[in-house]
Amino acid sequence: MGHSGTVHFHSQTLMEDIEATLPDMTGIMDAVDGSFAFQVKMRSFSFEKALMQEHFNEDYIESDQFPKASFQGQIIGWSESLGDGETHVVQAEGVFWCHGVEQRRTIDGSLKKADDGWEISCRFPVQLEEHDIDVPGWATYLISSTIDVDVQIKLTQQ
Amino acid sequence: MRTQESSSWQVVLLLTLLVCSVSSRGQGLLDILNESVEPVTVPVSATFKDTRIVNVQSSETPGSGVLHFVIAHRFGTLSSGAYDLWGLDNAQMRMGLDYGLTDRFAIGVARNTYQKTYEVNAKARVLRQSTGPKAFPFSLSWYSVMMVNGLKASQEYSPYYFTHRLSYVHQAILTRKFNERLSFALVPSFVHRNFVKATGDKHDMFLIGGGGRYKLGPRFSINAEYHHRLTPAFAPGALPSLSIGVDIETGGHVFQLHMTNARGMFERSFLAEPAGSWANGDIYFGFNLSRVFQLKTNSEW
Image 1 (cartoon, helix red, strand yellow):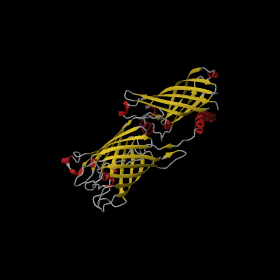
Image 2 (cartoon, rainbow over the protein chains, first blue to last red; image 1 turned 135 degrees about the vertical axis):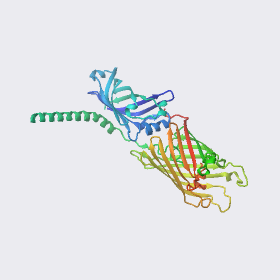
Image 3 (cartoon, chains in turn yellow, blue; image 1 turned 180 degrees about the vertical axis):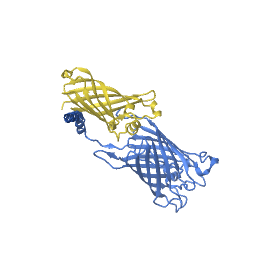
Image 4 (cartoon, rainbow over the protein chains, first blue to last red; image 1 turned 90 degrees about the horizontal axis):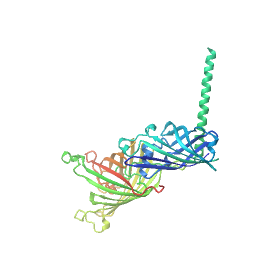
């Protein structure tokens, strides 16, 4: 259906906070059955520090090899009544694909029908280990083993 | 028997159809997304891990708002033997600070033990290798440095004017990252010194240099560089410089450890001055240790 979303992630350890945002996420939803897909380009993430961004792309996410991450799934218990203009807390089930590794995930989020489309937000943790993202021993003080991912997107009717 | 077989085939066929329809429906949404996304031009990053390959500049500059502090040592020759602990007793140092004014332009200052030399330098990324719709095959950076000899005047060294203390090097740094592991650099250099001892001595020299790196692990690479003189050396019979080293990266630090036959760490010295002989063991062990400090955060933040 449309785009204009942001993704934000956050890693927190005692030593260092690492945050990144991405302004140009794309998404699509089928309002008939509640199936949807979101996709981001890893190189679009921008970090507070230039070196973090380089390390993210070169050493951890390996963006040349795995340029994209995506989530593709279905909202559980989809019905017409979710489009009544109120904010609904929903769960979605699907496949999260990142760093070349697929994981079946169930995520929590919220959904609201606005005049010109759907506003969707969700938040889910990603375990680096589950996606084969190696963090060397010395970096475990700097990079959390669980990254919180925060997605806000507005899908406009097309 | 026959009916059983055909019915099991039907089940397989039905399953295959189901799997196909499920995956094609799911895939459909991502496919539509991919079609709607316009590909963008992305500059190739991390052609080299640091701003230098060993001695010579790489195409990299510190990012915008990044202060890059480098402390480098070259010890004495390996051939100096056990008494000097193969050169370790005899260190020369370079301390340098570079600052990225933008992602493509940096300025720097440095101080060297050798000839008490001060440096003022500037580096610009003119062209960047990139992928996407406006792909470009290589990067071009420009480096200019002015060096100031800080020695007191003596019989050996007798600059009459301040300008006699100055020398300059200008370099075009052409690099290409061939793949994730392999990068090469081609570096034409021009060296000018204001002061010469005798009237016949040359002021200028042209060189062509080559360098490269090969990544063996995510944070580890082997680097090498060589500089060939295109015009006669300042001193007859002087050997060109050849260096081999490794880069080890740990977070905000890069450790570069190397063996080189050039002891000076500023451009005029390692390009134009006579280097030691690898065959005779006139090789210096050394390191560059860099640390970055983000002074100004990304403006998009």
